[in-house]
Image (cartoon, rainbow, N blue to C red; front, top):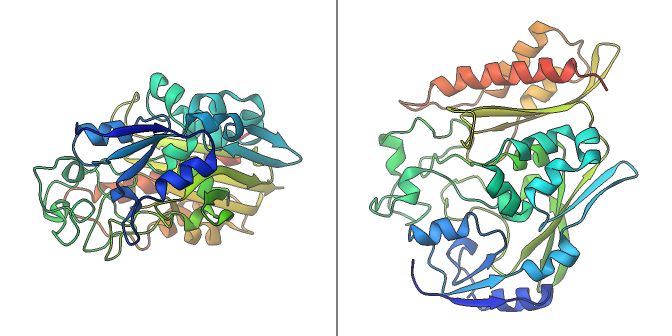
Amino acid sequence: MRAFAYQRAADASAAVQALGATGAGVAPTDAAVQVLAGGTTLIDLMKLDVMRPGTVIDINPLAREWSQIVAADGHLRLGALARMADVAADPEVQRSYPLVADSLKLAASAQLRNMATLGGNVLQRTRCSYFRDVSYANCNKRNPGSGCAAIEGFNRAHAVLGTSEQCIATYPGDFAQALIALDANVDVVGPSGRRSLPFAQLHRPPGATPQLETTLAPNELISGFAIAGRWPRSIFLKVRDRQSYEFALASAAVALDVQDGVVRKARVALGGLATVPWRAREAEAVLDGARFDDALAERAADAAFAGAIPRKDNAFKIALGKHVVARALHQAAAMEI
């Protein structure tokens, strides 16, 4: 790990001011000043020499304001510095938003969930081995314009949705799938004050600029998340190579409003399969207004992967993903609420 300066921000304005030391036009992930909360991703990448900040700003003093877990009046508000374990264990989150609780419970290890924050979790970077190993020069996320080693390399864990010829790295998180499925908003603090945007607009697909991973400016911070409405009939299903401490090969975040056997509203998101948190709107279009049965679940699963592009080692993910979507739909439809 390279030497760095450590600072502790007393409040949000101090943190934003410190982040403003980064020059314009720099990708937030390449900025000379980085934020430390749980540190479970940043410290890893600093040890690997993938990220090389000159200054690290500790924002944990902001937890007094930014660690709330409030489920009231049919809405859920979560602070960006709430710990994953605390949110997953909250009784009202478990009752009204089981998708959120499950996506957090199935992530990482218990020790990491006790440390990791929600804001840091949604901003975690890919686990692509070519990105994390600096001995590979050709990684467009780490070294723009150098190429993507994964396209011709070993790409079993890589994405089949949202890819480009510049990057096929998979977005690794689970919680983000719950947020995008439930139409969450994300609250952001920056030099111009506070703003809110749909969570679906936070992450950028790789396109021609994989190094630009989000729409945040280098001097902006996520302060919290908001979900409107209760979703008691919701589920997060995750398939992985082993049952403990592993990232998804395929996952599905599903929320349904079912009345008299008819799907009034459906929300479907996919994880482990795409370059960004992925909303499967094609699947939702098949489900909305239809009577739920086995055939409908299969049609929705097929629709979710209509635009998938497999590579030589990861074609199995399409069939696996379809099974995961269909199973999650069945489990959500059968939930007792």
